[in-house]
Length: 127
Image 1: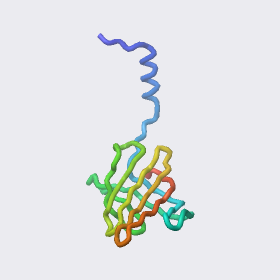
Image 2: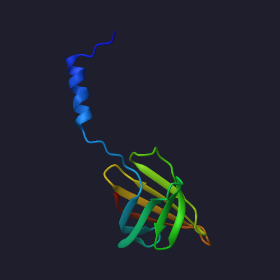
Image 3: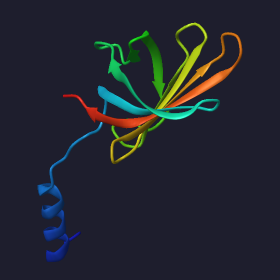
Image 4: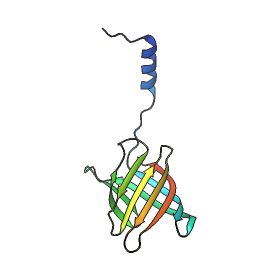
């Protein structure tokens, strides 16, 4: 017969009292720095959302350029979270959201001369 010690019961009760939260889509990301390998870095304003399709388990990266399908590369409901996709003609994206909600997004352009732009900012979980 297994008997839990009083200290194990106390620790278990303390852990159960902690608020439980998952970290999952949707995300709203505001990128404030844009870096281009040929022009350097500058302040900027670029917004992106990682959104889920209704009941289909599909994810999309939504920007001013439109929506493109992405896949989550990391374990669900945890951070860091990374998403990748290549939906729109000539563009591929990779977004990573860290535990502190800082984020990096790289956009790779392959329609013509290959190029990449990197964005730095923060994301917040939408509820």
